[in-house]
Each structure stands twice: as C-alpha cells, then as structure tokens.
Amino acid sequence: MKFAAMISFLLFAVFPQVVLADSPDLAPTPPMGWNSWNKFQTRINEQLIHDVAEAMIANGMRDAGYTCINLDDGWSMKKRDDEGNLVGDTKRFSSGMKALGDYLHDHGFKFGIYNCAGTQTCAGYPGTRDHDEQDAKTYASWGVDYLKYDWCHTEGLKAPEAYKKMSDALRATDRPMVFSICEWGGSKPWTWANGVGQLWRTTGDIGPCYDCKGQYTNGWKTLLDQQVGLEKYAGPGHWNDPDMLEVGNGSMTLPESRGHFSLWCILAAPLIAGNDVRHMKDEVHDILTNRDAIAVDQDPLGKQGFRVSKDDGKEIWAKELSGGDWAVGALNTGSESAKLDVDWNKLDFLKDTYTVRDLWTKQDVGDTSKPYTTEVDSHDVAFLRLHPAK
Ligand code: GLA
Image (tube, rainbow, N blue to C red; front, side, top):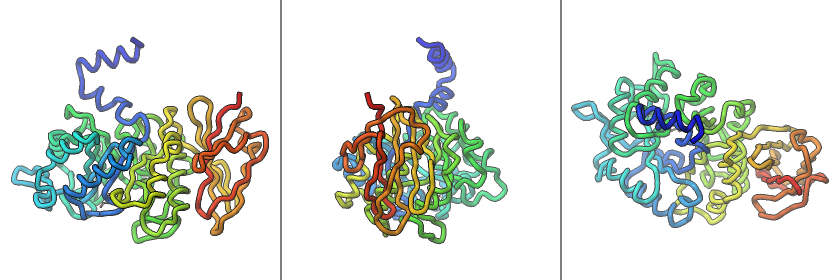
C-alpha cells in the first residue's frame, strides 16, 4: 500500500466522514449529468424526472457518462415544515424525495438537488440560511449525492464563509455529496473554493445562444471569454464551472451547439446537459454522446484547456491530455462558414510530430508536419486530437 493510501486508510478508520468528503474520488474528472433548469426552470415533477432517467438510459447518455440527475430550483414546498425541515413539493413529487432518490439509484444514477445560501432560492423557495446542518442531514436522509448551492438573497453574507459552512455541514453527514458552488464568480471562487467544493461557477447564467444577451443570461461565447486565465485553478477534484450545457436549446444552430460542446470539453467543464433529452434531434444526441469528445473532457490528467490565440474570425484553444496527446479546437468566430488554418508551428507546446484526428468527422486527417486547413461553419469548432507519431 502506498504511504498516502495508508494514511487515508488509517484516517478513514477514525474519521470516515472526513476522508469520504475530501476524497478526490468525489469528482476526479468533471461531473457529468443532466439538470432541469435550462429547459424546464421550475416546471418539474416526479414524472418528468422518471421520464428523463428512462430516456437517458434508452438513448445511451447514462452509459456515455451522464450519471447525475440534478433537480434545480423549484422542487420544494414554499415553506419549511413545523420542525423547520425542507419538504419536497407534495403534489409534484408525491412519492417523496427519498423515493425519488431510490428510483434514481435503482436506475444507475446519482441524485442531485439544489438550494441557496440565502434566505430564499432565486425562484423564491426556502433557502438554507441558518439551516445548514439541518438541510445537510435532510439531503443525506434522502440519499442525495450532489448539491448545487446558489447565491440569491444572501445580503450580509460572505461567500467563502457561507460556502465553507455548508461544506462542513455536508461533511458532517456520513454521506459523500459533491458540492457544486454556484456563486457566479463575483468573489473569484477559484481563489478560495478548492477544498470547499468540487466545482464552482465562474460566471453568471448561460443562455441558449452563441453571444446573445438575456436579462440574466449570456451566450456561451461570452462565458468562454471569461475562462481565459482560469485554467491554472482547475484539476482533479476541483473544477471551474462555466455553467451547464445549452446544447440543443433555444435558437442555437447545430454548429453552435457543436462548438459549445467542443469548447466545454476543452475547458474540462462539468458536462451537465440541460435540454429535453426525451425529445431531441439525432444530431443533438450525437453531439452529447460523442465518446471521443467526452474523453477529452474526462481525460484523467485533469488539465483545463487554454486559449492559444485569438485572431480576426478565429480562435485556437488547446488542452493537454494524458499519454502525450493534445486536443486542439479551431473556433470560427465569424458569421460565415470559413476555411480555418491551424499552423502547428505556432503551437509551441508541441514537441514532436503528431497524428491528427478530427473528432467530429471521425477521420484521420494527416499529421502536424504540414499546416492543416479545414472548412468550419460559423461558430463551430474543428475539434482535433493529436497523438505522438511513432
Ligand atoms: C441562478 C443559477 C441558475 C439556476 C437559477 C435557479 O440563476 O445561476 O443556474 O440555478 O438560479 O433559480
């Protein structure tokens, strides 16, 4: 047994909850799953969650790695019970939250839930403020595996303290729960949240578009720009979260969905699908379940990718992978389809000659001994995997 493993084993014998909750095993690679918010907001109920779970089994998403099913805002009653406990909405989740957790576990999923550090959630349901331990115990008793913890109605609170308090409350239960910090980036959680949670939002909310603006949302390109420089803060067990996927939602074209997914994989972002997986186009399904793309996201080295260059109409992004491989994405930022060049000589981290595979067309497209040029749709990404040539 290695020394570190032996220490863990001994600690586990004495303080099981500490080792379980701190274990990088909670999120050794970026979490993957589905969340109700982007498509359904608070229009959620037990039947929907059952149907989503069954669809994700039938369409291969669960087996492709999307193993968490996360209820977002709107699952609870509008008031706590007489003892101050949170209660699932008794009409919309009539079998109860423990039964929902059991259902998800029986179907091979983990059970995710949502709340806020403030007095209320963003949609006006009871928040956790001053109920940290009580709520953590409630979640543990329901079999919750993942808590997304939001930041509405938090007047007077300091984010590092409020999140640490809930993190400690979760650890004090005997149930390992992934802690997803959703503070929108205001207090730079990447500087304080490693060790508090396994992932932290770096931005405000995503909207279902390339670069449009909603009242509280921005398209994925705006959020992508905000990730530049954050790569050094991510690694196994602690991930930057540029928000959930909008693949297949709203007005996004298929190339825009593909570009979004490619870049989220290069960012080692959590891959939390947010579309109606019961009824999606085959092309959307094929994006979400592309195993080669997912393997880039889930690469065990756990390195977040970075922007290599930004030119008129083109950005190059790259991510180091295990085994000496690299992923490279060429994003067409123009409004028309265009021929993009990838000049390998400008990627000074490449030390050798590599074979090149296009992860969307699934074709081997040569090697890095000569520049690569390919047609890329507007807002799409040529997503390439490089492997050292023999
Ligand atoms: C905030 C979060 C979103 C979602 C909503 C729910 O805006 O950032 O991801 O959870 O609250 O009300």
